[in-house]
Length: 349
Image (cartoon, rainbow, N blue to C red; front, side, top):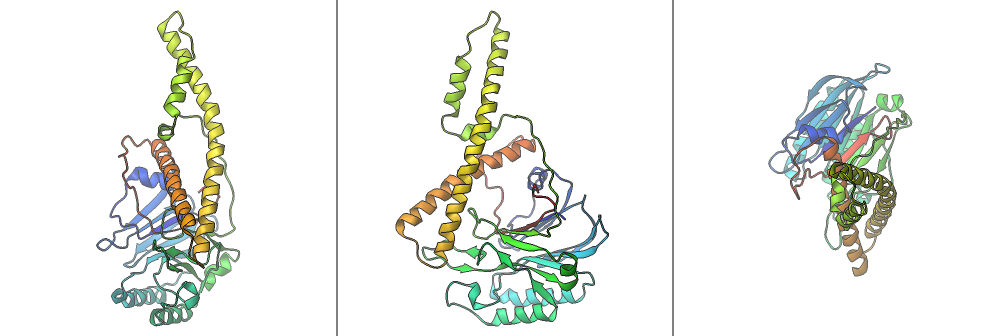
């Protein structure tokens, strides 16, 4: 099964090219729930090759009624964004109870609930028992169970020198849904430069499809230091021919041949560099959950985040280019995402 859910988007609309990028060009149906003021917002996309969709509704949530095309199993997918403000939490929980108690299909509910369940879901002693008590009572009363998360202890952190860590994001499932997908698990991914941790839901019902991509000039290469000097060197290395057009074609062939090998080589190097950066950031992030980082570690973390942002910017340009977007504003922030959770039928989603 395949879907993409993002909460606290802060956006009222999304362009078609952006949505195509998000689902790698697959045939997705998207539903956007606008934020209230500057907070909230939900984006939910469903792969129409995998599901038939029967209904869409919600207020603090978006709910799809789905039917798996491969076995006709019907269930309800719910993406929530619980308000951070205490004055709205009662309304959110009331709506959650009302929605769940009237739903006849097996449910899977996930997103940013903005409520803890126990003191050990926070790294300091500032803990309000009221909302966790009500939240746990609702979960028990609705016969829901939380899918255990591996990879991290918390899913959110602020940017203070001594950061607060909390587990605000989670995935709940009904007994009937668990019986259908008993091997499901949730993995906490790297936070990158967000303050929320993306959650990857895997039903263990996956298959992989590989796709071969032809060589294309990537606009993101223009961001790399020394790229233009390299192109100039290769271009000038070709001796002039008898005909200007022939000379130009020879230069183009030589440059394309060089860039093909260069791209293949640097792609592997950058992948390794990105993995090292993500692993180191993840290590520092986890260390900061239990102790204060040294000034050197704080500086290293900032440097790694800056370098990661540069790499992500190049990747962003690559996917926009492949979506045939003709304009990309320099420095334009495409989306501010605090929470993202996914399920996949194959690892290429």
